Image (cartoon, rainbow, N blue to C red; front, side, top):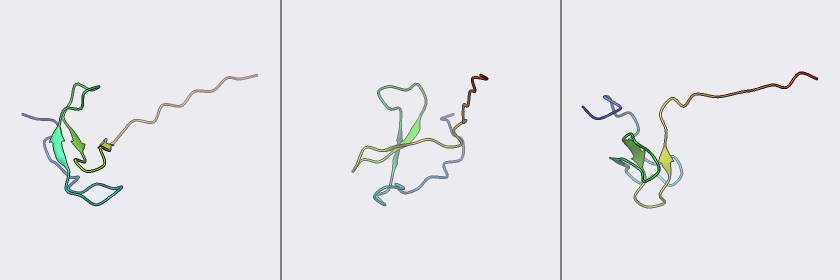
Length: 54
């Protein structure tokens, strides 16, 4: 079964073109990729934050 199971992104957030679900060249999971502008859309990305106490 392709990831994500429910494809919620239908159109590019940058240009509005309908997206294709495929595996980008620098990734190993199926993502929403805009065929017009090449933007890769990630669903529910995890924010990684670090601090350095001084």
